[in-house]
Amino acid sequence: MKELKLKIDGMMCTGCENRVQNALKEVNGVEDVKADHTTGYVTIKAKEDVSENDIKEKIEDIGYDVVE
Ligand SMILES: [Cu+2]
Image 1 (cartoon, rainbow, N blue to C red):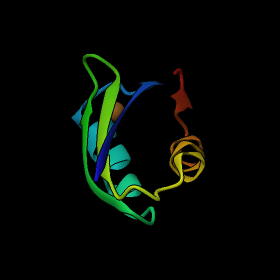
Image 2 (tube, protein in one colour; image 1 turned 180 degrees about the vertical axis):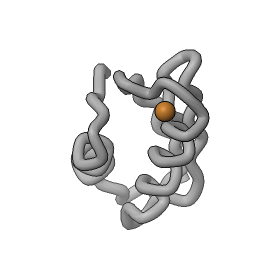
Image 3 (cartoon, protein in one colour; image 1 turned 120 degrees about the vertical axis):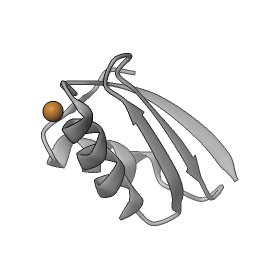
């Protein structure tokens, strides 16, 4: 298990948090997601072999930008 923390741009409300959380839970290897629109950070708990690229693509697919 590892923890990833990504800063993403574009989350404005709790609806965005839920959108991001639900989308990322569909990515293979992701176990838990916590998004915070006030800071822009998404904390992801995932299996060691999770693809960070899949996570970033998923975030961009639903209309947000990964900052770091
Ligand atoms: Cu929103």
